[in-house]
Image (cartoon, rainbow, N blue to C red; front, side, top):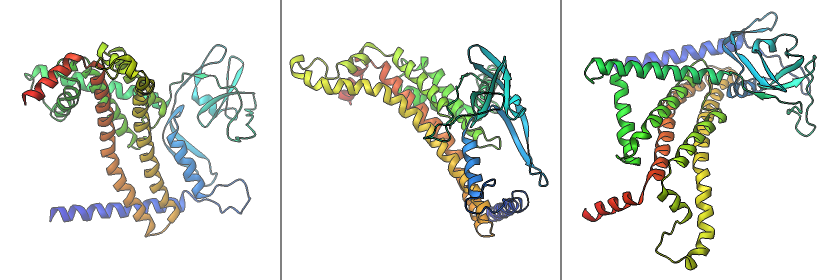
Amino acid sequence: MQRKTLVRVLLGLLFIVSFSGFAQDEHGMEVKEVAPGEKGSKTKKEEIKEFINHHLLDSHDFNFFGSTNEETGETHHYGFSLPVIIWDGGLHTFMSSEFHHNNGVATSNGNHYTLHHEKIYRTDAEGTLNYDKEHGDHPTNVRPLDFSITKSVVMMLVVGLLLIWLFRSLAKSYAKNGSLPKGAGRFFEPIVLYIRDDIAIANIGEKKYKKYLPFLLTTFFFIWFLNMFGLTPLGVNVTGNIAVTTGLAVIVFLITTFTGTKDYWKHIFDPLGDGMPWAGKILIYIILVPIEILGLFIKPFALLIRLYANMTAGHVVLMSLVGLIFIFKSWIGGPLSFGLSFAISLIELLVALLQAYIFTMLAALYFGFASESHADHEVHEGEIQHL
């Protein structure tokens, strides 16, 4: 009976929230009908597509929510601006709120800059942008080096500080309670033990896993927490930013490269071993060695693309389903779209954890390849023969 009551309550909430979305669309998000070829207004589909593209981009300010005045049509955003740090013949620093004044042009040390799709371009006092004739949406203005504190950077700092606070608190709790977990430690301890036993030790080995374990734990919780924040109303799609996933993959590549043993590098440049004379295997090496070297770069590339593509696709699908509510404008299409988006949101909770797990597992696997030695092969073969 309790389960049936819970299901009825959830269905009722889905219906109510879908109706509220319908009402908001009717009263707060009216779009004027546009005749073919007429300019000045956007269709609902174009607005939704633009909103999704904007969500996937990083931002130089942090917006919590916005509201539109029905009489004037002006949109007000509520949040805070972030520091802009650029290098253009010298260091230029100012707050991103400068872009919202003087027709979107910020002035620093005599230079003028403007934002276009969250990218900073040098311009004139009027904010003129020159576009490529072949690609009309790509300005040809000079782009300075951008080191700004963007929304993604803020969330990475927040997650980093959260991890430091959380695990320092857990460490103190363990020390006070005789290595027994208390409070949140009861939830996180099984996860830490799983990463240690079933990921680090299983792929790297008991002798060498300890030097890689801090990175694996940090990476897992860092990606997991960022993915979870991406599903909140804050709308921060950090792991859907290819620059972030590239940075993580580069760190994995550097650790793998600089901790690789002699046997690891020998396997790359001499994959057939010493059992065959060089005269007989030189032709084979012409093919194998380039493949092995290419594999050094393909592995981290697969890491960054997998995480980036899966998280981006999840956000696009989820927001597209929500956007269908405002397109259907019906009692049937609205609830169905909301029900699908609700189901996808639940799946995304699993995907957020799964992608952190996959990234950590593959990183541990690469570290295991790099740290493996010829003695480990002999021990492993001896164990197999004994069995």
